[in-house]
Each structure stands twice: as structure tokens, then as C-alpha cells.
Length: 553
Image (cartoon, rainbow, N blue to C red; front, side, top):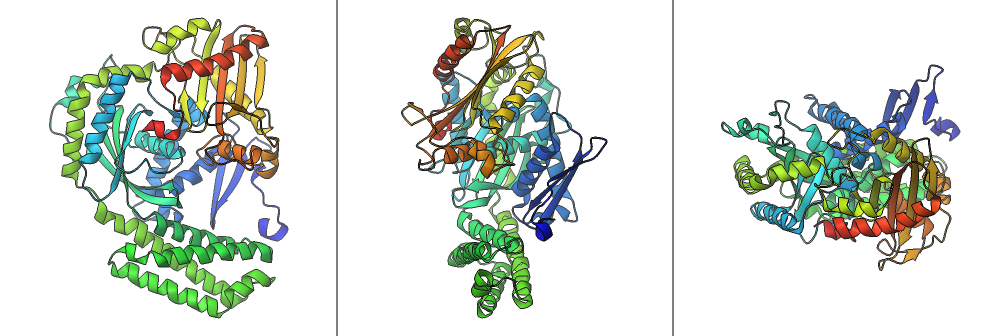
């Protein structure tokens, strides 16, 4: 339909309510069958594509490998996503949740992570973070800064951690930590440490290879080490070339093909200029030599003139592009899948670091597990300092505050420890309704039902905290990107919204914030508006919510 009529179908709904949803990434086709539910098939298939790219890069044929390990891992991560999307506010609003802990505990966590990254071999640029029950505790880096990647990478990695939970994990005791029996007996390296090659977004590459080590400290607590393989430029050039060749067949007009040719040429130029980074692998040198020869042959066929000026692509050029595509994918596999095996950190080194971290964290584990259960809980006043501030907000029963510039979330639990007033379904419905109206361009709205009053506010500020009024209507976003949905797992909706509303602003010049409020019973709109302004400041003061992405470090 897309090639013949320029009107591709993205979804077909059957009479019995069954949905058939289609998606495409490069030359790969995805199909999802499902019913209307809290997790729509459209969202599910989009997340499936993003997770497949996380595990395979742009060469998704690896999912068909003989041992089926990658396909099983993808299935486990999708299962984890469905579970967390139903149970976690962080995954429902798609933002990173941090434990709210005091300065002394924060400093201790940073100290532990710093010893972990400095204890690694001097080669890779290492980064580490600690997570408790899919909630970020703290992050640390040995490089100049954390990888310049999207906050969605944290959500992806936390999904990976959740999917790699040991199936034979010991049961927890009443305090939320592991039982004493969990410490008995020797540690099994294969059960304690898992190594996964992941492709994360970097500054100069949409999919750059990193070695990720997931180390289970205790059941529910994980130490994650992310090693940068320092192949961002090579991976970026390969990704750009692979995507350009794939899109050549989708381009309709010479103008589109001209733009694609520019990206193809740039990607290959970058790849060839960084050939020295590829080491002494005979296979890689042979593949790069074949790429040079095939690109030279295409240039002799006047590929630039053909793609930029001709209405149709001659068979010789078409066949040459197909051959180049296969060689590019083989090169990507050899460079980004085979070479990282030589950069792996030994199990003995990782076990030593894990034992050191476990010894240092032992004194804090009960506190961290308890805080993960009642992070910013409204009902349990004794657990968190922010709770005492809620007395200043009459009838407030729940809030979600998100710094969309860093995608960091602060929110009470929807499930109080005493089991009363479970707000999960209420909060999920509020988020879904607010997102539907946000897609229509409504950034502020107040509504109510029989039991609660709700508010959703999204606003912009400059670096000094001064309110900023959008220069273009947010409704233009839907006209430009009709399928884009609020969130960051698939694509950053909010950075795209900023670029549309502030076309001349820099990425750091405008910051975006989001606030959801739930009040008990009918509440005047004036009170909701007044509280929305005060609660944002209160949350920042109490939780230390990041003013910039670097505060996470």
C-alpha cells in the first residue's frame, strides 16, 4: 500500500474488536495482534521495535540466530515492560524514578559506585548505577560525564534488569530485604552476573555499542555497570549508511533520494575515516575493503546522478545498493557484535567488585528496600520527609511531578502499605486521559468525577526558572507527527514538543515540566491552580529533583 498508493496502513480493526497493527523499521516488518486494553497494541509494537534495536542494533536478523537467545531475551523484556507498565508509575508516564534519600545516604551510594567504576580495568569508560525494584538509587561515571544518551536508555536498562531476575531467587523477609538464608553458600558467577551487549543512543550515533553487566546484589537490588566500547563514530557511520540504503527503496521522488544519498555518502565517509579504530581483525579489514570496492563501483555507475535526478533506479544500481546493504550489515555484526567479546571484563574482577559493594551496602539494604516500597508515600507520614509538607495542601491525595528536561519523576506510591485507598486504577486513568488531550494540544486541564478532582499541567521555563510562552501552537505537533505519543521509550515526545513550540531555541534553553494532581472530592479550580504552582517548588525543595540532567551524577 505504501509503495503503490503512498498510503500505508498502520492498523486494521476487525469486527470482533481484534486489532492488527503494522510497523516498519528499515526493511523489517512488524505485526501485532491484540485487543483494546490499558496497553494498546500500537504502543506495544512501538516498544517492541525499540527493544529489538536495543539488543540488535540496526541488524534485526540476529533475532533469528540458531540459539534463539536474543529472541528469548526480547520476549522477557517485553513481558517485563507489560508488568511494569501495569504496576509502575515511572513506566506509565515514561520517566525515571529515583529513591528520595537523605544527603548522607546519597553520598554513601556515590562512594560505593565510585569504588566500583575505579576498580574496573583502565580501558573502557565505565558508568554504574544502583537500582532497587526498578527504581534508580544513584548513578556514577568514570568518564567526563554519563553517556550523552537519552533518559529512555535508563528505562530500557531497568527493563533489562527486571527481565534478568534470577528465577530461583530467594524469597524476601518481612522487611523487604532478602532472608538470611540468601547469604549462605558460595556465590555462583553465572547466577550473580549477566553480561549483555546493548545499543544505546549516544551523541554521534543513534545506536552505539555498550557492554552492560547486571549484578544481583540481593533479590530486588541490582548493581549495573555500563562499559562504553568507544566505537561511537564507527557505529554512527555504519548506522547512517545502513539506514540510508534501506530508505533508498522507500524514497519516491528524486529530491528524497538526493537527501538519502547525502546521508549514505556521509556515513561511509565517517566509517572509512575511523577504520584505524577497528583493530587488527582480518575479517573486519576484509569487509571494509569490500565496502570500499562496492562503493567505488556504485560511484562509477554514477549513483549520485541516478539517485538525485532519475525517476527510476536502473537495475545495476539497485543490485549494487542491495550488495552494499548486505556488506554493511555484515560489517556491523563483525564490528559491534564480535569485537566487544575481546573487551569483556573477567568474571573474577566483577565478582570481587560485587562482593565489595555488597559488604558496603549491607548496612543500608533494609532502609533502601523500605524506601522503595514507600517512596514519597502520602499515607505513611513517618517514612518520608516530603509527607509533612502535604499538610499544606488540603484534600491532595496524589501527585506526579516530572522534570521533562531530565525525565526524572517524583511521586507518592499509589499503593499505601496499609492497603487502604489503592489509587492505581484512578491514577492510570488520569494519565491516559491527560495524554490523549495533550496529543490534541491541551497542555493544561482540570476535570472531576464522582470521587476525585484531577489536574494536569505542562509548562516551559528557561534556565533561570522564568516561565516561557510557546511561540508556536502545540497543536502543530500532531500535524507534523500524527503518530507520536507522549513518552520517551519510543521517541522523545517532549523534546519534539519543545522544538515545535520554540523553533529557534537551543536544547538547553527551554525546559519542560509536567504535573498531575488528584484531590479528594470536588475542589475549586482556583485551589488546584494555586496548589499546582506551590507543589512544584515544594517537591524540588524536598526531593532535590534535578535542575539539570547532570544532577543525576
